[in-house]
Length: 284
Ligand code: SF4
Ligand code: SF4
Image 1 (cartoon, helix red, strand yellow):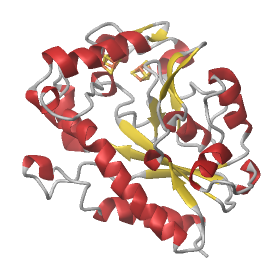
Image 2 (cartoon, rainbow, N blue to C red):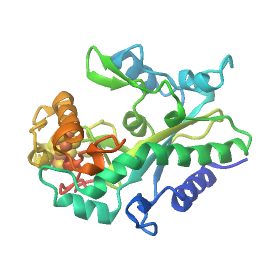
Image 3 (cartoon, helix red, strand yellow):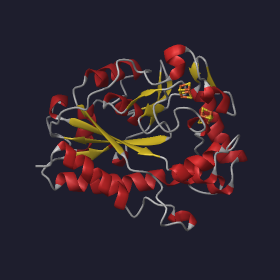
Image 4 (tube, rainbow, N blue to C red):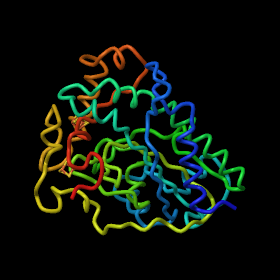
């Protein structure tokens, strides 16, 4: 049976060798799109999952509810499940390009966002197959059709699962002023989640507070992400999701380059994730 360490190595290999993890779309097949991932484990019955459901809304899933979307009619408790969170850091090259962005995200950033859905489905399918061949049952959130957007009475736009909030539970990082998760590899990241029916030791959270790594929340300093946002969607009060989302729609429908305007791509922005002290790691 695979150990936790062997699973982490297997995930790293799956990402590193995936034929989908590269910039082939712009003729650069030798250039990886994402760096070596970071991986955290959480217990399926970690109280944070219940807490999220209570705070965000009844539509928010518990781990067992996700599991049972694939393994219908199987009786299982959250305590029998482990939630694996995987974080994908942007590469140095993409971040260098994105640092120059002022109003429009860089082309490379838009490609990483646009290619994400297709790539993550293939990579997590591969990981799920490997986990299943070890005797586990495994579910990738990004393969679940019902994974979609809702509206939370308390928080506005919300999905029925949050990869970032899961990454927080799995010890990968804490939230910054702009809502992004600050990890040891920085904030320019995307996340995915896989749930398995085997129990593993959870990754220790090296923090007590969900804002522990953000300088603004710690001592009122920094605020660099406020200055990076072209539409003032970040202020000292936090991240205005509606304003941010409206800007992404404008990029997609009106002002963006052809990469996103005349394609199936979902538009991204992420200017607030670059040229800031938490871009590449936990700020000192
Ligand atoms: S740029 Fe500064 S204020 Fe913004 S999330 Fe990072 S540490 Fe916090
Ligand atoms: S992603 Fe949203 S919050 Fe961040 S810079 Fe772009 S519009 Fe502003």
